[in-house]
Length: 194
Image (cartoon, rainbow, N blue to C red):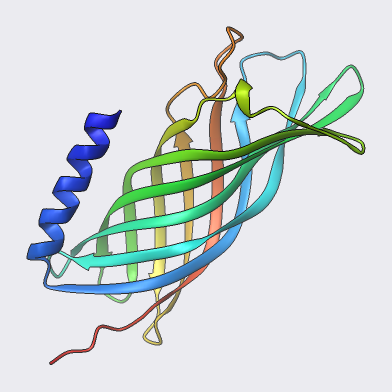
């Protein structure tokens, strides 16, 4: 994982140096987060939370761009076990590195890897909150699929699905992976041309 991350960082750095145009931006939106859970003994429901952060939109050509982002992402799930409702809040810092294909009038489709670092993990039942960070892996990897639209004003909307690739739980139980559907708005500052 560290080698892949280092390689992507180096590739991103070299592309940055060759890039024709770089635009910075801010973004935020809603996450509908859940997990893949192989057991059918319990009901798993989504946690609704937020994503907030910044982006760099790096033009590689007229049609292609690279867009690394740094985001706070509220993830997790709700679960009912023996009629007791539990809410697991998993908060991450996420680094997606997305290749975007831009279609004419502002539309773009995007895909790429995402690396996450777990900030906190808490399980709540009623008024009781328990720190469960030691039960979850510190690093998570996902693959992102998405689409967006950028207006002439610099504002845009996007929607994504983040497919967790790895097991996020530390114990020997069945593999749990993150699944997040995210919608949001962003603002891309226009680069000043000389």
